[in-house]
Amino acid sequence: MTEYHIPVMLDECMDALRVSTGKLYFDGTLGGGGHTGEILKRGGRVIATDRDMEAIDHSRMKLSQITDYNGRYTLVKDNFKNVLEVLKSNEADSLDGALLDLGISSHQVDENLRGFSYSGNGLLDMRMDRDQYLSAMTVVNEYTEEELSRIIYTYGEERFARKIARAICEARKKSPVETTKRLADIVKSCVPVVGKGGHPAKKTFQAIRIEVNNELSGLGEAVSDIISVLKPGARIAVISFHSLEDRIIKQTFKMVSSDCICDKSLPVCVCNHKASVKLIGKYKPTEKEITKNTRSQSATLRVAEKL
Ligand SMILES: C[S@@+](CC[C@H](N)C(=O)[O-])C[C@H]1O[C@@H](n2cnc3c(N)ncnc32)[C@H](O)[C@@H]1O
Image 1 (cartoon, rainbow, N blue to C red):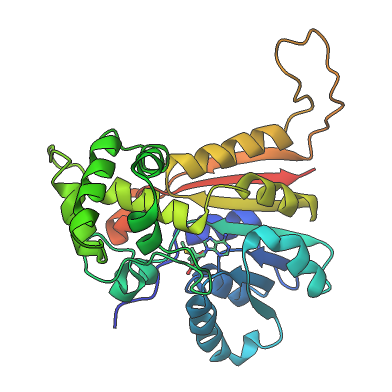
Image 2: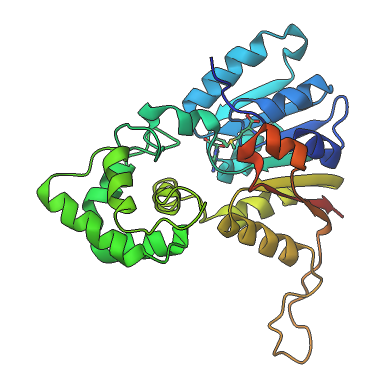
């Protein structure tokens, strides 16, 4: 059986969070429970969210097999953007650390039924939360050519966005584009294959996935919310997998670690903003980890500490 998900930069995250016995951590992206499991192994307590019920069920099953962890974790099916409500309903008013490991799990990509994969074949879906209405099927078949082009360009940073959007709209006139394979083939016909660059449909699939799951909007606010409930000295660690996510984390960390966020054109500070964190660092996976788990290659870990 293939592994549900191999946790990325596991030791780096545990070191960054300085996980220790009895302390309370928030894991906003439970996935296969790799990071949460390690926090529990090191004696910590965890409140974790995932918007995918399959991830919650899988991790609940996995963690329940270790009796020593009993009573030290709470798993909630929710969006981490609701972190403050989740903590409140679990009577937690402050945290000793928090982790976000953004994006999708290997299980979500590898399971063709979830409709995320450009290399497998399944019905177009890409919903992390299968209770939500909007799916990739709707985006691909109902969005206008202009909307598709904008999404593929903005969220996929794909320079052939217009051509791809036009090809999708032409194809769906014949019959709805229902499978990941058909979408991947349409994209392939628009993108020249150059050298060893990734799969030609990678950027388009990333873009549609971000749109379906509304991944970027509210991300910075969620990070700020988490920081607002960290205890002094507690840390937040965020792993991102592409430049759009990383830019949001970088900008948010920059803002919350600054004593002034006034427009640079102003001669004097009028914002009265006070830094609430200090930046600890930015880390990349080691060559050894990348060799063992190629999916870790694009990871960037950023860490900040509450003042
Ligand atoms: C990269 S995986 C996390 C893997 C996990 N750290 C592990 O070690 O197994 C990302 C997970 O976060 C979930 N996710 C992504 N965005 C989310 C959000 N806004 N709220 C809650 N869960 C989210 C996805 O459903 C997926 O299961």
